[in-house]
Image (cartoon, rainbow, N blue to C red):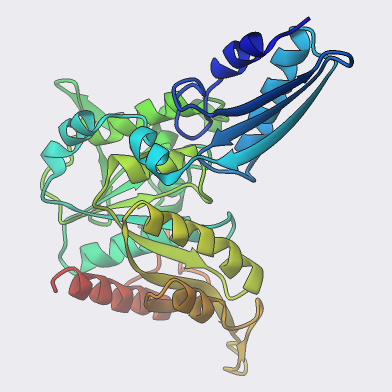
Length: 352
């Protein structure tokens, strides 16, 4: 017959999926109730963030370990850890380690590009904003931090690989932007199946072991949503500023609000919102067609109490064989001009 101490030991060995600390370390086991006659175990567990896919994974682990230990049925309730506990445990590196990682990058302005969901063009925005800042004479780096869905090298038409000199990784430069991505280290577009702690080490390496040189801006193309990789980055770079990307669709804006709220909860400054796929302009008639509706970017910026930095219409970059980059707009392209205007706003906001 399973008892409360066994339950606490078994569940306590499992990790909070966001904090990478055991539930015993975070005091995440709030309550345990056992009905001996039915061998039914009920537990209440506190974690960093509820109602996520990571919660479902942890729930399955709890059920498995308790049933293996003799429980016939398991009931689980989740709640969020108190704010003061999150402050103690959040992040995969200590404050001292964070300072060590970021010390060579102390004079760089970090800008994270976030979204609530995939498919809104966050990486396209990241790439073109980085290029636009470089066109304005700024020294720019770009980290493709979307570890599972890396796409920046392909978007920028990068075919070269980073070099290693004296145990330092030299990023690949294209259009005046220094780029590092998980895509450089995965063969044949293989899927990345690593767990959170391993991914944290990759991000650590992108900061610690890459020879960025002098930079004005280091942009981070974050994974969509508010999962463990995004949380790790928020903790690694406490002074990062953030841009949230959405489409005009109300649902996309609603989901994107979570990413903006996460930035505010981790004391990051919101630079503003970019509304992508804002409209389609017909070449034949010149009329704008609002394919995904209207108003999502405006509503999101109002909800987050920040600025709408710009609206990007649907459009195709002009490709050529000389400088092939399937997602980069030319400087004189109408959409390229919009990105230059957004870059000007970002520069102005960072010089105030």
